[in-house]
Image (cartoon, rainbow, N blue to C red):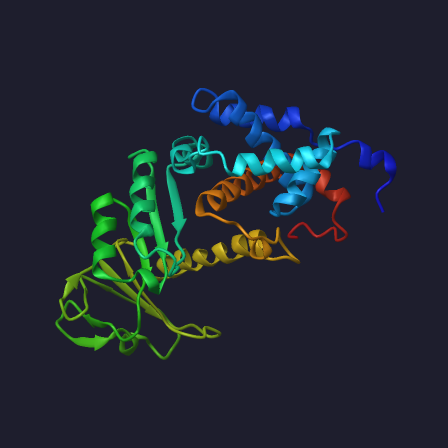
Length: 307
Protein backbone atom coordinates (compact mmCIF):
# COMPACT_ATOMS: atom_id res chain seq x y z
CA UNK A 1 0.00 0.00 0.00
CA UNK A 2 1.21 3.51 -0.76
CA UNK A 3 2.09 5.62 2.25
CA UNK A 4 0.42 8.97 2.78
CA UNK A 5 3.73 10.71 2.07
CA UNK A 6 4.05 9.05 -1.36
CA UNK A 7 0.42 9.80 -2.14
CA UNK A 8 1.01 13.48 -1.43
CA UNK A 9 4.09 13.79 -3.65
CA UNK A 10 3.67 12.81 -7.32
CA UNK A 11 7.04 11.97 -8.85
CA UNK A 12 6.06 13.54 -12.16
CA UNK A 13 4.54 17.00 -11.85
CA UNK A 14 2.69 19.37 -14.14
CA UNK A 15 5.71 21.62 -14.78
CA UNK A 16 7.77 18.71 -16.09
CA UNK A 17 5.02 17.52 -18.44
CA UNK A 18 4.34 21.08 -19.59
CA UNK A 19 8.02 21.51 -20.47
CA UNK A 20 7.84 18.36 -22.60
CA UNK A 21 4.73 19.62 -24.41
CA UNK A 22 6.30 23.02 -25.09
CA UNK A 23 9.27 21.33 -26.71
CA UNK A 24 6.84 19.62 -29.09
CA UNK A 25 4.21 22.22 -29.93
CA UNK A 26 5.45 25.69 -28.95
CA UNK A 27 5.00 28.08 -31.87
CA UNK A 28 2.39 25.86 -33.53
CA UNK A 29 -0.25 25.67 -30.81
CA UNK A 30 -1.67 28.32 -28.48
CA UNK A 31 0.01 28.39 -25.07
CA UNK A 32 -3.23 27.60 -23.21
CA UNK A 33 -3.90 24.61 -25.45
CA UNK A 34 -0.39 23.32 -24.79
CA UNK A 35 -1.11 23.69 -21.09
CA UNK A 36 -4.40 21.79 -21.44
CA UNK A 37 -2.67 18.97 -23.32
CA UNK A 38 0.00 18.76 -20.64
CA UNK A 39 -2.64 18.55 -17.90
CA UNK A 40 -4.53 15.76 -19.68
CA UNK A 41 -1.28 13.86 -20.32
CA UNK A 42 -0.33 14.19 -16.65
CA UNK A 43 -3.75 12.81 -15.73
CA UNK A 44 -3.38 9.79 -18.03
CA UNK A 45 0.06 8.99 -16.63
CA UNK A 46 -1.18 9.01 -13.04
CA UNK A 47 -4.55 7.37 -13.77
CA UNK A 48 -3.18 4.63 -16.06
CA UNK A 49 -6.60 4.87 -17.68
CA UNK A 50 -8.32 6.57 -20.62
CA UNK A 51 -11.59 7.09 -18.77
CA UNK A 52 -12.31 10.83 -18.72
CA UNK A 53 -13.44 10.85 -15.10
CA UNK A 54 -10.40 8.90 -13.90
CA UNK A 55 -8.03 11.12 -15.89
CA UNK A 56 -9.60 14.21 -14.33
CA UNK A 57 -9.39 12.81 -10.80
CA UNK A 58 -5.75 11.82 -11.28
CA UNK A 59 -4.97 15.27 -12.67
CA UNK A 60 -6.58 16.90 -9.65
CA UNK A 61 -4.59 14.69 -7.28
CA UNK A 62 -1.29 15.45 -9.07
CA UNK A 63 -1.95 19.20 -8.96
CA UNK A 64 -3.60 19.33 -5.56
CA UNK A 65 -6.94 20.67 -6.83
CA UNK A 66 -10.55 19.51 -6.56
CA UNK A 67 -11.61 16.46 -8.55
CA UNK A 68 -14.49 18.16 -10.34
CA UNK A 69 -12.15 20.85 -11.68
CA UNK A 70 -9.81 18.23 -13.10
CA UNK A 71 -12.65 16.35 -14.78
CA UNK A 72 -13.98 19.56 -16.34
CA UNK A 73 -10.53 20.50 -17.67
CA UNK A 74 -10.11 17.14 -19.39
CA UNK A 75 -13.65 17.18 -20.78
CA UNK A 76 -13.18 20.67 -22.24
CA UNK A 77 -9.90 19.68 -23.86
CA UNK A 78 -11.51 16.70 -25.62
CA UNK A 79 -14.23 18.99 -27.01
CA UNK A 80 -11.85 21.78 -28.06
CA UNK A 81 -11.87 22.12 -31.89
CA UNK A 82 -8.63 24.09 -31.63
CA UNK A 83 -6.84 20.80 -30.93
CA UNK A 84 -6.67 19.50 -34.51
CA UNK A 85 -5.02 16.09 -34.29
CA UNK A 86 -4.34 15.79 -38.02
CA UNK A 87 -2.68 19.22 -38.06
CA UNK A 88 -0.50 18.29 -35.06
CA UNK A 89 0.90 15.35 -37.02
CA UNK A 90 3.28 17.88 -38.61
CA UNK A 91 5.04 18.20 -35.24
CA UNK A 92 4.32 14.80 -33.73
CA UNK A 93 5.54 12.51 -36.54
CA UNK A 94 8.97 14.18 -37.00
CA UNK A 95 9.43 14.05 -33.21
CA UNK A 96 8.68 10.31 -33.11
CA UNK A 97 11.03 9.64 -36.04
CA UNK A 98 13.85 11.72 -34.60
CA UNK A 99 17.08 11.19 -36.56
CA UNK A 100 16.01 7.89 -38.11
CA UNK A 101 16.65 7.40 -41.79
CA UNK A 102 14.15 4.54 -42.00
CA UNK A 103 10.71 3.98 -40.50
CA UNK A 104 8.60 0.81 -40.46
CA UNK A 105 4.89 1.72 -40.30
CA UNK A 106 2.33 -0.98 -39.45
CA UNK A 107 -1.28 -0.59 -40.59
CA UNK A 108 -4.20 -2.53 -39.16
CA UNK A 109 -7.47 -3.02 -41.03
CA UNK A 110 -10.90 -1.85 -39.87
CA UNK A 111 -14.40 -1.62 -41.37
CA UNK A 112 -15.00 1.79 -39.78
CA UNK A 113 -13.77 3.88 -42.70
CA UNK A 114 -12.84 1.92 -45.81
CA UNK A 115 -10.95 4.84 -47.38
CA UNK A 116 -9.38 6.17 -44.19
CA UNK A 117 -6.03 4.53 -44.83
CA UNK A 118 -5.62 6.53 -48.06
CA UNK A 119 -6.03 9.80 -46.17
CA UNK A 120 -3.70 8.60 -43.44
CA UNK A 121 -0.95 7.58 -45.86
CA UNK A 122 -1.23 10.81 -47.84
CA UNK A 123 -0.93 12.79 -44.61
CA UNK A 124 2.05 10.68 -43.58
CA UNK A 125 3.75 11.50 -46.89
CA UNK A 126 3.18 15.22 -46.22
CA UNK A 127 4.83 15.19 -42.79
CA UNK A 128 7.71 12.75 -43.39
CA UNK A 129 10.84 13.98 -45.11
CA UNK A 130 11.70 12.50 -48.50
CA UNK A 131 15.06 11.51 -47.00
CA UNK A 132 13.36 9.02 -44.65
CA UNK A 133 12.68 5.61 -46.13
CA UNK A 134 9.20 4.44 -45.13
CA UNK A 135 8.26 0.74 -45.24
CA UNK A 136 4.54 0.06 -44.81
CA UNK A 137 3.42 -3.28 -43.34
CA UNK A 138 -0.21 -4.19 -43.98
CA UNK A 139 -2.43 -7.24 -43.58
CA UNK A 140 -4.87 -8.94 -45.97
CA UNK A 141 -7.48 -6.21 -45.63
CA UNK A 142 -5.22 -3.94 -47.70
CA UNK A 143 -4.01 -6.43 -50.31
CA UNK A 144 -5.40 -5.05 -53.56
CA UNK A 145 -4.13 -3.39 -56.73
CA UNK A 146 -5.27 0.12 -55.78
CA UNK A 147 -3.34 -0.05 -52.53
CA UNK A 148 -0.14 -1.16 -54.28
CA UNK A 149 -0.54 1.72 -56.74
CA UNK A 150 -1.08 4.24 -53.93
CA UNK A 151 2.08 3.13 -52.12
CA UNK A 152 4.09 3.36 -55.33
CA UNK A 153 2.71 6.85 -55.99
CA UNK A 154 3.67 7.97 -52.47
CA UNK A 155 7.15 6.41 -52.87
CA UNK A 156 6.69 4.14 -49.86
CA UNK A 157 8.19 0.66 -49.76
CA UNK A 158 5.85 -2.06 -48.58
CA UNK A 159 5.26 -5.60 -47.39
CA UNK A 160 1.57 -6.42 -47.83
CA UNK A 161 -0.06 -9.76 -47.09
CA UNK A 162 -2.72 -10.97 -49.53
CA UNK A 163 -5.19 -13.87 -49.64
CA UNK A 164 -4.11 -17.37 -50.62
CA UNK A 165 -6.81 -17.57 -53.30
CA UNK A 166 -5.21 -14.73 -55.31
CA UNK A 167 -3.61 -15.87 -58.55
CA UNK A 168 0.16 -15.44 -58.75
CA UNK A 169 2.02 -15.72 -62.06
CA UNK A 170 5.74 -16.44 -61.85
CA UNK A 171 8.27 -14.79 -64.14
CA UNK A 172 8.34 -18.05 -66.13
CA UNK A 173 4.61 -17.74 -66.85
CA UNK A 174 3.48 -20.52 -64.50
CA UNK A 175 0.22 -19.66 -62.73
CA UNK A 176 -1.01 -20.89 -59.35
CA UNK A 177 -3.07 -19.60 -56.49
CA UNK A 178 -0.85 -17.98 -53.87
CA UNK A 179 -1.47 -20.90 -51.53
CA UNK A 180 -0.21 -23.25 -54.24
CA UNK A 181 3.23 -21.61 -54.12
CA UNK A 182 3.68 -22.27 -50.39
CA UNK A 183 6.37 -24.97 -49.88
CA UNK A 184 5.46 -27.88 -47.59
CA UNK A 185 8.99 -27.86 -46.17
CA UNK A 186 8.37 -24.71 -44.13
CA UNK A 187 10.97 -22.77 -46.08
CA UNK A 188 10.04 -19.48 -47.71
CA UNK A 189 9.87 -19.17 -51.48
CA UNK A 190 10.68 -15.84 -53.13
CA UNK A 191 9.65 -14.85 -56.65
CA UNK A 192 10.80 -11.67 -58.36
CA UNK A 193 9.03 -10.19 -61.35
CA UNK A 194 5.77 -11.88 -60.34
CA UNK A 195 2.26 -10.77 -61.28
CA UNK A 196 -0.82 -11.00 -59.08
CA UNK A 197 -4.57 -11.36 -59.76
CA UNK A 198 -6.12 -12.22 -63.10
CA UNK A 199 -5.27 -8.68 -64.24
CA UNK A 200 -1.59 -9.64 -63.99
CA UNK A 201 -0.66 -6.63 -61.87
CA UNK A 202 3.16 -6.55 -61.61
CA UNK A 203 4.78 -6.54 -58.16
CA UNK A 204 8.54 -6.45 -57.56
CA UNK A 205 8.52 -9.63 -55.48
CA UNK A 206 6.25 -12.20 -53.81
CA UNK A 207 7.21 -14.28 -50.76
CA UNK A 208 5.18 -17.31 -49.61
CA UNK A 209 5.83 -19.26 -46.41
CA UNK A 210 4.18 -21.44 -43.78
CA UNK A 211 6.59 -22.13 -40.97
CA UNK A 212 6.00 -24.63 -38.21
CA UNK A 213 3.56 -23.16 -35.69
CA UNK A 214 1.90 -20.79 -38.16
CA UNK A 215 -1.90 -21.12 -38.28
CA UNK A 216 -2.01 -19.94 -41.88
CA UNK A 217 0.47 -19.35 -44.67
CA UNK A 218 1.80 -15.86 -45.35
CA UNK A 219 1.60 -14.70 -48.95
CA UNK A 220 3.39 -11.37 -49.14
CA UNK A 221 3.73 -8.85 -51.94
CA UNK A 222 6.66 -6.50 -51.47
CA UNK A 223 8.46 -3.67 -53.21
CA UNK A 224 11.75 -4.87 -51.66
CA UNK A 225 12.96 -6.70 -54.75
CA UNK A 226 16.53 -7.16 -53.52
CA UNK A 227 15.60 -8.34 -50.00
CA UNK A 228 15.88 -12.00 -49.04
CA UNK A 229 12.77 -14.04 -48.21
CA UNK A 230 13.87 -14.32 -44.57
CA UNK A 231 14.25 -10.54 -44.31
CA UNK A 232 10.77 -9.91 -45.76
CA UNK A 233 9.16 -12.49 -43.45
CA UNK A 234 10.97 -11.05 -40.43
CA UNK A 235 9.89 -7.55 -41.39
CA UNK A 236 6.22 -8.53 -41.73
CA UNK A 237 6.29 -10.26 -38.35
CA UNK A 238 6.83 -6.82 -36.78
CA UNK A 239 3.28 -5.88 -37.80
CA UNK A 240 1.94 -7.83 -34.82
CA UNK A 241 3.44 -5.28 -32.46
CA UNK A 242 0.34 -3.23 -33.21
CA UNK A 243 -1.65 -5.81 -31.24
CA UNK A 244 0.50 -5.12 -28.18
CA UNK A 245 -0.16 -1.40 -28.56
CA UNK A 246 -3.90 -2.02 -28.92
CA UNK A 247 -3.84 -4.12 -25.75
CA UNK A 248 -1.99 -1.40 -23.86
CA UNK A 249 -4.65 1.14 -24.83
CA UNK A 250 -7.84 -0.93 -24.88
CA UNK A 251 -7.58 -3.73 -22.33
CA UNK A 252 -9.14 -3.02 -18.95
CA UNK A 253 -6.92 -5.41 -17.01
CA UNK A 254 -3.57 -5.05 -18.78
CA UNK A 255 -3.93 -1.58 -20.28
CA UNK A 256 -5.81 1.70 -20.03
CA UNK A 257 -9.30 0.34 -20.65
CA UNK A 258 -10.28 2.27 -23.78
CA UNK A 259 -12.66 -0.52 -24.84
CA UNK A 260 -14.79 0.30 -21.81
CA UNK A 261 -14.86 4.05 -22.42
CA UNK A 262 -17.81 5.65 -24.21
CA UNK A 263 -16.84 8.54 -26.50
CA UNK A 264 -19.59 10.55 -28.14
CA UNK A 265 -17.72 11.72 -31.25
CA UNK A 266 -14.78 10.72 -33.42
CA UNK A 267 -13.14 14.09 -32.76
CA UNK A 268 -13.12 13.46 -28.99
CA UNK A 269 -11.83 9.95 -29.62
CA UNK A 270 -8.94 11.26 -31.74
CA UNK A 271 -7.94 13.79 -29.07
CA UNK A 272 -8.10 11.07 -26.43
CA UNK A 273 -5.83 8.87 -28.56
CA UNK A 274 -3.43 11.80 -28.99
CA UNK A 275 -3.21 12.27 -25.23
CA UNK A 276 -2.65 8.53 -24.86
CA UNK A 277 0.21 8.65 -27.39
CA UNK A 278 1.78 11.64 -25.62
CA UNK A 279 1.60 9.86 -22.26
CA UNK A 280 3.11 6.66 -23.69
CA UNK A 281 5.91 8.62 -25.33
CA UNK A 282 6.78 10.42 -22.12
CA UNK A 283 6.68 7.19 -20.10
CA UNK A 284 8.94 5.51 -22.67
CA UNK A 285 11.46 8.35 -22.38
CA UNK A 286 11.39 8.14 -18.59
CA UNK A 287 11.80 4.36 -18.74
CA UNK A 288 14.77 4.61 -21.09
CA UNK A 289 16.38 7.26 -18.88
CA UNK A 290 15.85 5.13 -15.78
CA UNK A 291 17.26 2.05 -17.47
CA UNK A 292 20.36 3.96 -18.60
CA UNK A 293 20.96 4.84 -14.94
CA UNK A 294 20.43 1.25 -13.79
CA UNK A 295 17.29 2.11 -11.84
CA UNK A 296 15.33 -0.84 -13.29
CA UNK A 297 17.24 -3.10 -10.87
CA UNK A 298 15.10 -1.74 -8.05
CA UNK A 299 11.85 -2.57 -9.87
CA UNK A 300 12.49 -6.06 -11.28
CA UNK A 301 11.96 -9.13 -9.14
CA UNK A 302 14.16 -11.17 -11.52
CA UNK A 303 17.81 -10.10 -12.09
CA UNK A 304 17.93 -11.57 -15.63
CA UNK A 305 19.27 -9.01 -18.11
CA UNK A 306 16.98 -10.22 -20.89
CA UNK A 307 13.75 -9.38 -19.03
